[in-house]
Image 1: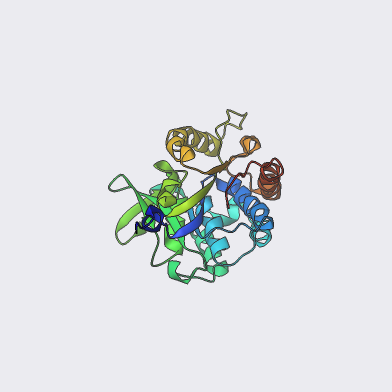
Image 2: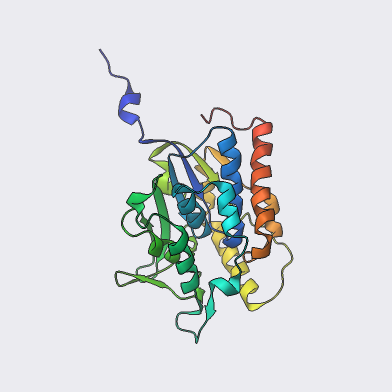
Length: 265
């Protein structure tokens, strides 16, 4: 009797979701998760970069999408950062680390309710690194540390910066482990108007560089959710977080209503 190949090819997770970076635009991830939940779709594993790792960690920790949106309603760039004499970056994000320490119940990857992969960039060796075990908050801070703006995060003697430098859309991080992967790209490249401040010029430049490293990952999604109107928002438009959340929700609902999910589940 021949044993079906499918038995040997079975993957450990049915549905994975990959959440891109994008600053406050990452709140659209929470809106997407809400729309998916309404269809009975919950990921068995999550991978995230930068803001995607923050939303992914909170969701994996048991927060509902609406609760995640509420958490970010009363924060600002100034509250979460502190300017410093440049020492690897213009700003420190210790306050943001304290924010995560306060609200994340899980302090290790192993304590999360859903497995999580967090992608950061090893600045010393020039490589993408995926964290999936051990302490949780430090890798998330590393994944969010935009070069020049924020100081690198040192973990076990190694300097780490934003995972988006080399992999801003972590689909391939979980592709081989999942039967289906939903990818949510919060940073579609749109050459929108912008305010020419130092912060916006730096972030805009990084966004252009990130375009090249997401193309392969976009092709590896079974379902790609990429709200094009996200291009109307800037990375640090924190006061527009609720709008961004609703945009992620509406965009996903439109896919559902248009029956573009196919045989996802």
